[in-house]
Image (cartoon, rainbow, N blue to C red; front, side, top):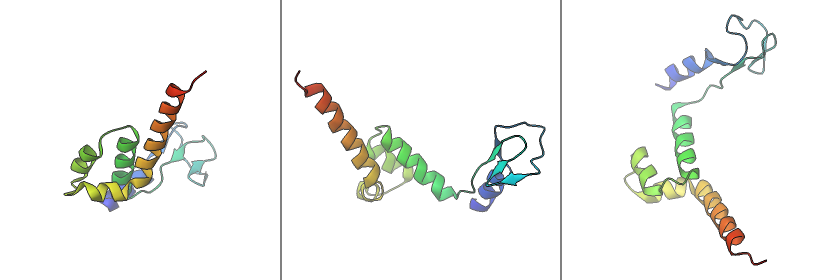
Length: 102
């Protein structure tokens, strides 16, 4: 699956001119039409990104753990602690603004 995904991503371009054959590519960008080639990611990277995005958007950890197929929510909590902590920091910032006097 990862091999096929990487092959597909290497053929995928964003933006630019659809009729351009992208002959002059530097750092994943076509110098002629400015289209950008997607980076070659693994399936696991996409899975990790999906979980991080869901958690950052406030989806409960238990739901994300279920989507990922984790049998224990502690695995999700330990793997994505950085995302959960950032959400906690945003939440405390909201409370600070709401409770601020004057």
